[in-house]
Length: 262
Image (cartoon, rainbow, N blue to C red; front, side, top):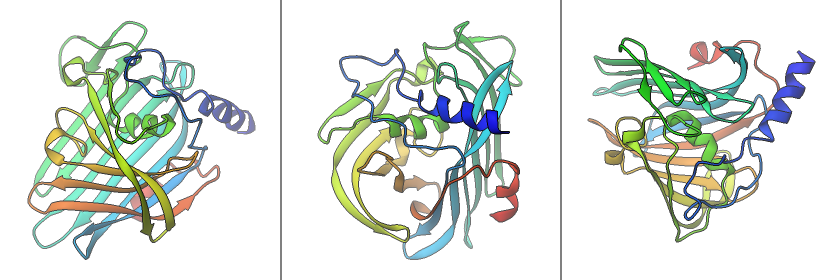
């Protein structure tokens, strides 16, 4: 296990934007803000009502088609008398080149369920979707929805700038837009954080889709932690995720423990 931890630490140092962004609109990187074992825990609020919990974490290292890959996970669980949701995204990012190699979605909202599984092949320039015949063309240095949450933390973001990133693995959903709105100081249960406020937009479905009117607050330091996220959901309207706890350390031995905790 020690050699895996060393490999993971070294690889995280390489998780900076790769060639493939539009150089005219791409900001410089800001280092490596997510250590192995990092877990960011959030409360999910609907107005003044606590609706549920959310968690972003670096689960550990898996091997995808012979390539070591960092497994990251983002999950939101919540309910009220009108609405129930259990949305989970998992992403595997290759340590060698920081591109997405696998992406899964498991969304449950009221009685609706949506499940998707994508295998992504950066070297060959295509991806496959489970249940769909044949490969489909991808892009250089592809990223998926969950990977973008971590990718944006490696960027040097300048308020007043709008960045276009052409790295979403499905070409028809590019570019991903990052509109950096302002600086702010945010007081959340985990503490008080000087923050950068941005509006991320990804075409299609998901928490950052075009119709969600999402806003993200990242800590204005070298970690770029996601301190708060506001996004519009069906039925309930706007939900707010506020950071309540930061954990770190090699807590990767029970990758499914989060399911029993939430």
